[in-house]
Image (cartoon, rainbow, N blue to C red; front, side, top):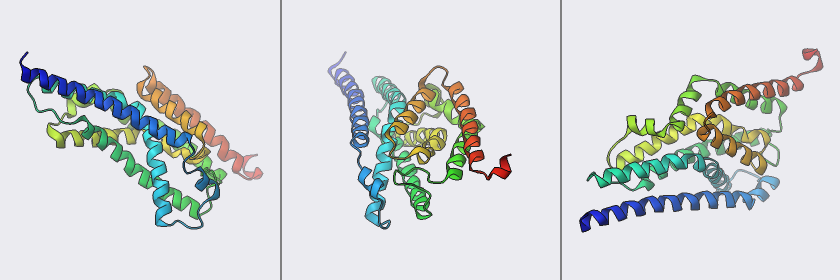
Length: 260
């Protein structure tokens, strides 16, 4: 092996190692933020008004939460991208920084975090959230459960889940060259991931955005649904369970005369 080839191989391996370290640090810091209860005092006291600074505090909270919950299940796809990128580099093709793919993925969930913050603002405005940022309305809680359950059974959900569960298929059919291509693939994979999980993330408003056990439970569910061998069946089972749960909650919120 020539000195030039050896140097390139070392650089590509270093790129993979840096991605692994970066992912571990990002996941660890995000979970540390949540475990430390960052934003907890704000959620318990609530703002006197939604100022611009408070909006951005809540936005950071949501974005950190999405990173903590979604990066573990996306890590295998990011590492596969780095591996494929490395092999292309070894064959003389132009390799690109793997961080472009990962950054684009995180940006997609940043966009979702903006929408979640805006939704929280509106729900708070109509007094539909309690101090733990959980539903203070039984009909709202039941509707969230029911909507999430129905979405779990839709063709769109399963199409997005297939892409998330089969990164080799994703890269085989959607590979794009160059830095721009890496960034676009990151956005595209992030969009599939968002299409797969956005309603599950919406359930944070059911039991509480600051309910740590609920956050951990949803994160584990997402991890199993995407990576476990029978994850697609888990999604269907969860959908049926959520529909039943939501129906029970909604039935309990009706006047007695309507359910007798």
